[in-house]
Length: 135
Image 1 (tube, rainbow, N blue to C red):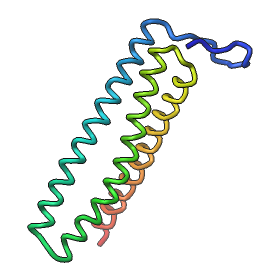
Image 2 (cartoon, rainbow, N blue to C red; image 1 turned 60 degrees about the vertical axis):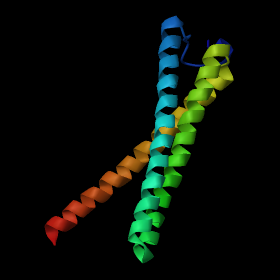
Image 3 (tube, one colour; image 1 turned 120 degrees about the vertical axis):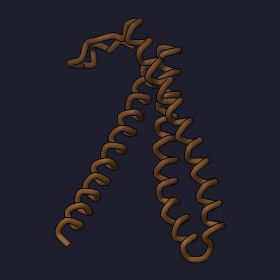
């Protein structure tokens, strides 16, 4: 994973054995995280279906509708995280710079999206708290 000095990069570094092992661990835990998130989402689907059957009517549709947005976001994010871990593991195994770059880009995308979602959610909570205090 050495950079090409002819590219004019300001970062002139290589991935040694310790860094390679750390990156393997990061990619392994990213994969575990994504797989556990998929399993949790599956349990959530089962729970919502059982709850919707017990509730019935309009509220059941509303419950499923709200969860649908959450499931779609979760699937997209976890596919990105899983693909990132696969790309990094293959890149480290085969010393493939393109796959390594792709894996890091995917992981960066994952964290950017999660960060944006957290900022939006915290902002909504803050607005809700302020509204509750003022009214």
